Structure formats: structure tokens, C-alpha cells
Length: 103
Length: 155
Image (cartoon, rainbow over all chains, first blue to last red; front, side):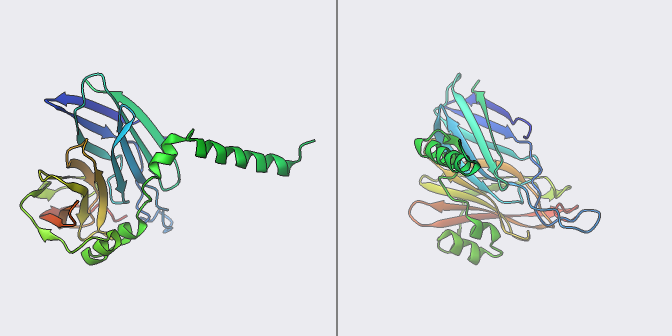
């Protein structure tokens, strides 16, 4: 199981800026280890964001997204106290979902 | 007495039932849009647009790509894509000289701004593209060259 995501959602005018820092190796499948063996690919494939349980954004990522991925986007109409839920699925089927409150 | 075989078959049935009942909502939602493997393996813009079923892209001033001019560390290059145009369906971030062009694909809904920022790996100095797939079928892009002093994909 991976470490929790760090999510911060702040209201700015009529929208909320959401910043997410995920904890993931994001191996490309192209690197080799010390013995010259290829390190298998391991990366986040699907990301979804929900505002109060309603999906507002989905994304698909390739292995070229950096290690411990950062994501920033803004949600329209989010108010203080709303719940932002971020979930991801990686290519090994691991999942993680974390929630934050808009402030 | 319950045999091992029956047990296995029952647990499989239960899992299937839970899935259909929507008791595994995260899994169901995450899989709603199937992962586009072909797009993520595309090596050229033409291949990529074919995999996405989109037309040839046109350069546009209304799409913006943000990023540094020079990235010291190719393993972590902050880039962003945004557009103020209405009717955006998808925003893509591409790195031209990476082994696979497509880095990230964002599905835009009415509830979010067409403005995303993330960090990508770059193997070498290259052009990066922000591509907007519009609801009316138009494909618009913006391009920026980012010089990398230390590559992030080798090893």
C-alpha cells in the first residue's frame, strides 16, 4: 500500500484550486538496474477527481509523468467545506483514494 | 461439506455481484474510460491523433503551454496546459522526443477549468506540446521548446 496523497484545495474567487501530490515510483519500464535487467514499468494510469461525490475530472497518464506526481487544476463552483476526492489506479491494479476539504 | 472448488466459485460469484451492485464504486468509475494504450505508445503526432480518432492539429494562440525555458533536471519538469476556449473535451501534454510522446491526457468537464499543471520526465531537450481536442472536432495545439541539461529517462 502506498503513502497517502497530499491534497490541498483552496477557494480563489468562484473556483477552487486543487493541488495534489501523490506518492508513486512512476517507473517507465525503460530503466535498467545495476545488473542490467529492465525494471518493469509501474506507473499511475488513471486519475479521477470528485467534488462532493460527483466526478469532475478524469485523466489518463503515461509513464513519462514524473515520480511522485504533482497535479494542479481548478474546480468551478467549489465552496469552503466541499469535499474533494482524488483517486488513482496504477498499471498493477493498485488503487488509492484520498479526500480533502476545500478551505 | 463445502469443497474447495465450491468455495472458489462462490467467492468469484460474490465478487461479481458486488461489482454489479456498484459496491466497488471507485473501481467502476476509474474503469469507465478504458486506458488508451495505443495513444500512450504512439511515437509520432500522426500516430497519436489516429489512436485518439482526432484530426490533424492546427497551431492556435488560444492554447497555452507553460514550462521553463531550461530545465536543469529532466526527471522533474513542471509543465502546464490551458486554454480559455469553451467546448474543450480533452487536453493532452506531449513531449516530442520522449520514447512515447503522450505524457498525460485530461478529460475536461464543465465543472473544471481547462487548465492543468503537472510534472513530467524528459529524456532530452525537446519540444513540448499542449493539445486541445475540441467538442466540434477541431484539434488545436501550442508548442514550446524546453532545454534539458540533465536527462530524466536514462539510467
